[in-house]
Structures are given as structure tokens and as C-alpha cells.
Image (cartoon, rainbow, N blue to C red):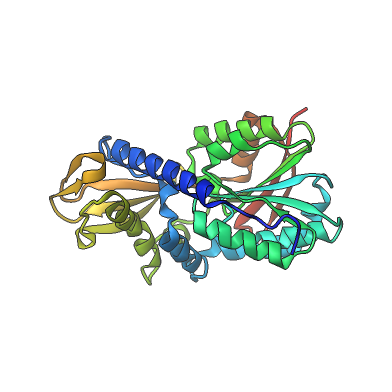
Length: 330
């Protein structure tokens, strides 16, 4: 066990939960009163959503996790060699950190101690991951931070350089302008000595992409509809799950997979916690997530727009996925 074993007080945990509950209510109210209607994908990851996503990562159609796992297994040493030895490792959206272990092991193979800050919005999953990692690696100082990405960037503070990990192609959840703005904030944060490692899914054929986000066994559909279950549980809503279906569409010209929950019929849903009665037309789609795909030139252009240079790039053997190491432009 390391001296950095994570400890979060009951008071801190309660305050964090209250803050996130308020943000969840605001996002639901704002999204379901917008036209067209939307729900923010960051709220997918309650305990059940996190469990379902781990199942998605094992599906035959969902190539992303296997591609990135293969890539990191092969190149973790080369990636670690390019990070500053005294850097704090910060991970946005850490989840269960299964792939991150490959980088942690590569870093600890060359240095005795490493500080790791996993950041995630799911409190219980974050705590379980932090404790498991702290118990697994001597010399690993784990400092979990329960927050969304924007809050996390504002809260981070260190006297040394940062190595920011953003794995799993989470950048794809942002529009291209949003991604550029967010990366620009990271570039300012890690400058001048830090680095950012960004997992980015590459453009490919429609059949492969739509299958990845609408699998034959229906796990992704349950994951998407679980957002309505969460609204029922936490905000007292009365969504009937059999009244909605899952849809995923690849817009090839834009390079975007868009996910929706679609109303099967005309219906009204009450959400007492935010004082809403929401009317849905038959066939009305509520946008829940984007997954933007990139070509290599698009990645380079995005990095330049955000104030980064591409220092190195690694692809999996099938050329499906990129791990891109970014350095702040000097």
C-alpha cells in the first residue's frame, strides 16, 4: 500500500454528490426544454451506466477498446519515455483505469514514485478504482478527484509538470470547435513542460461505426436508455422505457456518429424535481451523444488550432485508432 492511499471524507463525498445532483437537474431541465431536445452524455455514467459501458467495451462490435489496448500494450514504454520524469499523471474520465495500468507500469519501471490523479464523475467507481490501484502498485500515490472535466481543470494545481491522459476517444464527445477550445485550456495548463496523450478514433466505414454504437445484443441501447432510468430515480420522473428506443446514425460527411433516444409514440413525461411536464411527439428524437471521428490531417489541424504540436503518434496495427502525444507550442 502506498502512502498516497486515497481517503475521501463523508462530508466531502456528500458535498460532491449534492453539487453533481444540482448540475444533473439543471442539464436535464435545460436539455428537455431546448429545441431540438437533448441530454448531456456526461450523465451516462452512474453505477449502472459504468457497468454497462464496461460490458460494451467487451463486445465484438466495439473495436475501440481492443484497438487502444493493443496500441498501449505495444507502445507504453515508448510513450512513457517521452513524458517528464517528475510529471503528475492526470487522467480525464478514468473509469476502471484498465488501460491506464499499462502506462502506470511503464512509468514505474523507470522511476520509483508516481503521482496519479484519476478524474471521474462517478464517485463510487472512482473510489473503487483508486483503492485498487493504490493497493496494486508500490510507489503509486493516487489522488482521486470526483468532478467533470471543466471543474477538474479549474481545481488542478501542482508545482511540477502535468502529463494529461484523455483515453478512449472521449474527445469525440465534443464538437470540433468544443474540442479545440477544451484542448486549448489543457495546453495552457500543461505548458511549458507538460504533455497530453489523447486517444482519438479514426474515420472508417459506416457499417463498422454504426455496429459499434448499435450492437446486435442491445447493450448500447440499454446504456443509452439507462439515462432515462437515472432521471426517473434521481429526479422523480415517470419515463416509460418501452416508450423509447435507441438510434445511432453515422453522418459520413461530418465524421460524426450521433446517438438518440426516440419516442415511439406521442406522450407526456413528468419530472417533478425540476418542475417539468415534457411533451414528446411520436418519432421525436432526443440527442444524447456524439462520437466525432478524425482523419490524421484533421487531428493535426485540431492540435494546431489548440496551441499544441503533435510530438508523436502511434496507431494500432489495423490503423483504426490513434494515440497522439501533444506538446504545448513554444
